[in-house]
Image (cartoon, rainbow, N blue to C red):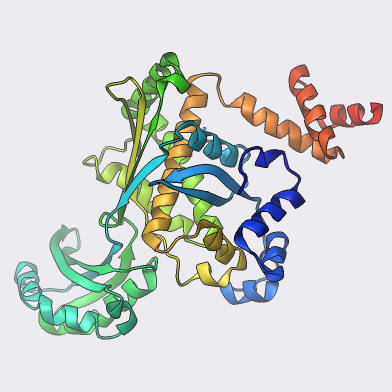
Length: 413
Ligand code: MEV
């Protein structure tokens, strides 16, 4: 698909390019304008009285492990899609390199009211094989696909309310996000755990701190394209985030701008990813909250960006299959596995983080924001086609971005 200048096309022309490229059916094309029928929404949540739409756009220029990708993003924030596309373009022709672990999630089981917690844990671990058999006795499809419960671990917690066990069932969730599979397994195991220990099982739930389901991506931004002063400025900004938790938090919000937008566009659980990402930002650094991505210079003086983080997303189950636009997103992304989707999302996260700190380290983010804001104001004032950029550019030059001014300009034309 022609990606150069995509942003200059009309919405209709963009939709046409997209539908030609991916061979969309009539129904699928309609989905782009009316994404969620209210009847479907009514099955997804409770007390439904309407649906809520967001801008849905395509990030361009992504090349990941040698493969070109067009990435759908749903976001209310101006600049995010443009910033991701621009950052991806700047690391071409190599693009991003990505790798990932197996899709293993943690299910937690809390056991209380034990006579001897240490002995109970030892006994349970001796029965691991038997317990894993029970865990895998329900979901034969997952097991047939190579997934299912793979390991059982645990520790004794010394708490104000006495000793308790924190058990962890490690479940390979294959192409699912896994919450359902993991929670089912935890509940399935509980009666046997109570029988073996004589204790009482309380919580049985997935953990969103998915330390065994991580993605690692890297990209190199050449010094010829960025300039040495810009690279130095980016490294200064990174150092700021490494040494100040207030900056690190906002820095990581920039990573999630990209990740959450793809997460939403594919019908995945944004809260699960956000919780896991921020928690991991301190978990992996012995409790110190740090930037998720890392930046350094290579021998040639180019900027190397690296991002390693947990990313639990699925391409089967949940809204990924019930939301028509989420289904369309997966078609555009052409992913064959949840791991591949996670890799793409992490690349977008690195791209957005890079774009944000590059802008912040140099001219600041307000100019880019203001240009987009000016376009929105021009549209709101009634500008059409080429008028939009003309009016927007003039308002930016005048540093006077107001609806009244845009209307004034349009009346004069
Ligand atoms: C705004 O949505 C995101 C940024 O604040 C990220 C950052 O500060 O790195 C620009």
